[in-house]
Length: 271
Image 1 (cartoon, rainbow, N blue to C red):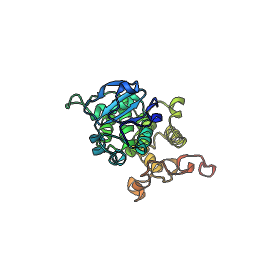
Image 2 (image 1 turned 90 degrees about the vertical axis):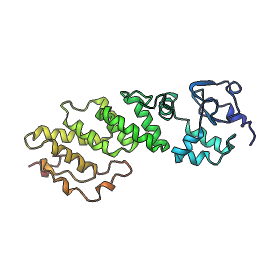
Image 3 (image 1 turned 45 degrees about the horizontal axis):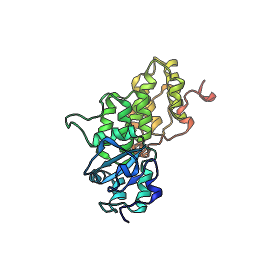
Image 4 (image 1 turned 135 degrees about the horizontal axis):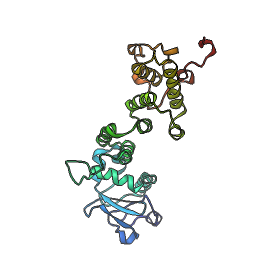
């Protein structure tokens, strides 16, 4: 394919992969102030902003991009690749992409360019790193969020980005805190999570002398691994968790059924 891309692709307003010999003047686009490199060889637009970065980093660190970019020459993208790469940027915001590229292109190697206290920004980095398979950037984001994310954010991100250890930690924290789950918080949770938290909190309220913090953690672990929660605070030792429980949630989904989560509901058990 020549340097000229198809007119219908070039004319699109957002999320379009463009050949490196096309200029922002030709496309009537605005260069990104930081992430438009004169020697870049991977160009695309997001929300009307023209980016031009280095294909090498995307191919080196992401099998997702490698499978889409290695089949193309340095100077052009064939029509099939244009369609494929166009779809990558369709649901990516410029703000989130800038946060991600700030990690890939740090201004200072001593510290990341992303604010160390910004849960929202690091969450965007984690989502894109997970989506695109940048393993080292994902680990960096997890490490930073570990220290700053509140329990509800850890729960929703853990579910969305398959950070499984966050789910048990977050649900346990929500069970132990004094405040009940608010309506706004519940809207961010699955039904399973809401039932687990509220039923465990109710058990603690009724049997506060029998259930300690360790028992709450064990209840949450049993729920997470799809094991029925014992009745009235009679908690199994942690060693009695199923031996294959670590494999039961590899896909990040929360397994089990309603009867595993609801405590003190059955009339036959309430006596």
